[in-house]
Image (cartoon, rainbow, N blue to C red; front, side, top):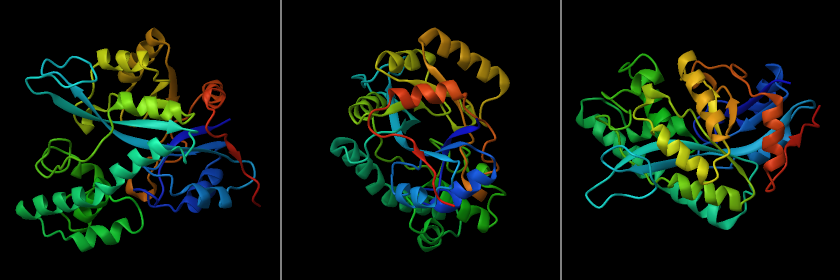
Length: 301
């Protein structure tokens, strides 16, 4: 079995519609694909309707989180009294009940903050001399949940950077970058609690993707594991081989599942569907632990 547990559609910041994504996943030879759009379940129904026979859909979401760290860089879920630093991270949530009200409310708060955040980034870029407009970014985002990749795409179109990845640097949109704007994000300990209450399973996405900015320390991953984190994403395009080996060792020490996936965004990024995959036994364990929803087998012709 070939299993890809991290993909995005036009419901957030991918370029494939949900229907196109599942058809492309089948064409890429996948047996299982997870739809994990940012902070939204808006692509579920279209993906289910178009799901080809022989392909199983895992419903999910990639939740925007921020872990508060003491100035010393230690782990923990609370802010220190003398001022704390925050590290953004993404939590993959699988097979939760999308109608569970508390988790749905938190996803809505994150989504509602996306437009003013993107507008703020546009304003900062204009102050830096980039001739970008909100109308341009909104047109690129379409009906999706607007985010940094849409702003980055506009920068590519304007010739400011050569690729979307080139926009995610301290010079531009990386965490803490010149045009970066913070948004409402879940505390990851709360995210784990909420997803579990909704019957879902949690996996820390690309935890050591250093080129994206500051990463959480391993001590914090241990605390997340103690709070009920199910797994960590190991095989990912932003992890080199030494990093993957380090994460596998950490997962073994903490009793965490290890996954692999493409983090596919269509033409917006260079990764291909199925570029990295998850072991079938790990996938089976994720499905076994979930009580909020079940994988959906494809029946369409």
